[in-house]
Length: 213
Image (cartoon, rainbow, N blue to C red):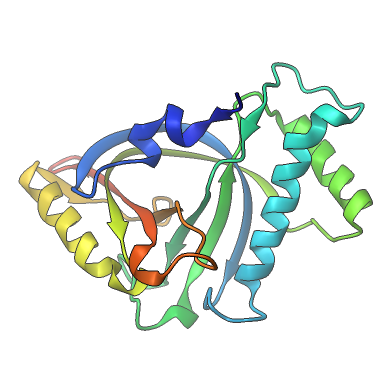
């Protein structure tokens, strides 16, 4: 049975639809940075997703190549995630998606080293005849966060975010979105196949204890 990160780490990937506080450890990701409306048909975002999955499956299927990754075990590719921000705004303005800046990511298993990642870039570039130069090995130490499962359209996220922020304040915490800590979404549904009102998305915001610097 392939290791499934969503099932093994439910506290990170399958939270309840009520806000909760969680501490997220440092993780490594496959990442592509970009900007603009993610819904744009020929936009950067959709191209970035193709690049991410190209590398994700190259690493997963490395077991069928001559490249042996130490500690490798079979696993389900983790879900697509994204870190989002807009210049000059502490949070997200959903009315101006054209101003989005983002880092689109897929989690890497801990056994994947930077050397293994570099091999995958070379392998995918050669086999798929595609330019993967925008893809990077990204490490993020998220730390203390408030999170909640949002069910519904992405445009309806503000109501869930408001619940998260109310809960955070009740727990003696404040929002800590900065140039290095971002609005974070984890996509548990495929928006191409699931009706908007049934989409499941983990929303996560960085926080800190009130009074902490």
